Length: 218
Image 1 (tube, rainbow, N blue to C red):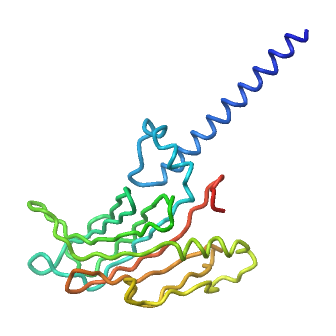
Image 2 (spheres, rainbow, N blue to C red):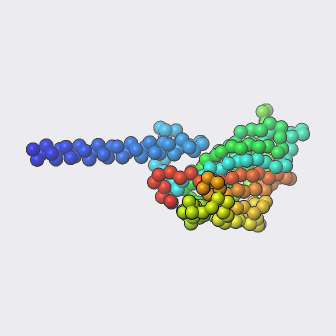
């Protein structure tokens, strides 16, 4: 009877272990399903280190472009490529419009808040290489620091500005960038970015954090 009881205990331990492994895999697959351009399910095992170091997900809402450069005869067919480390995401193409409204959500996985996010606008061409229409860059550390500092959001009124970033020679901001609490009780950052290496153009984006269970940051 003692031996039988020991065997049952060991079986229960193994079952609990396998359930924990399956739950971790399901969570990992769910997180990667939120990230555009993420590895396929078959590749998730090789991405364990990424998931172990994952702070959370950053949703980049690419709103619109303003006064973009003309790269075709009279207009352009612009789209935006967002890069962070090895991640590369892009918006849809808007035809014949130098003031496009994309309103696309791109989701980045954040493992290191010191890695800058680059943004490049391209003009889509059917029969030749896509032309660059300028590039920009922004950092996410200030946004993440606000998330770490203000954890009692239910006590903070909507519309409260938590932090402000001012335009200077070290960033691509056109106007002051506010980090604030929106009507849904979430921390948001609005950025109006100046495009570099081009004659004209600006891009407006908005940042929002996506929490997930077991985040090492929050």
